[in-house]
Image (cartoon, rainbow, N blue to C red):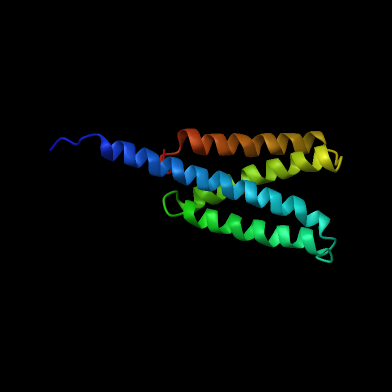
Length: 125
C-alpha cells in the first residue's frame, strides 16, 4: 500500500523536535553551569535559583529527547557540546587559559559529536 508521504513528514518533524529538545537541554545546562560559579557555594540566592531552574529544565528536555533519540547518543551529544560551550565561556568570560592539549581534546570531542550526528545509524535523522 502506498503512503501519502505524511508518515515521512511526521517522522522528520518528530526527529527535528527531538533535536530541538536536545539543543534546548544543552543551552539550559550551559546557563546553569555558567551561573554555578556565581552562586559562591550556593550562598547567593539569585544565581542559585538560576542554577536550579536551568538544571531542572535541562533534565526535563533531555528526558524528552530520549523518547526518540537513544540515551547513549543523547547523552554523548549533550555532554560533548556542553563541555565545549562551557570551556569557551570559561575562556571568554572568565579568561581561563587553554593549552594545546585542551584545544586538541575539545577538537576531538567536537569531531566525535559530528561523527555521531552525521554517520551513526543510531540517530534519528
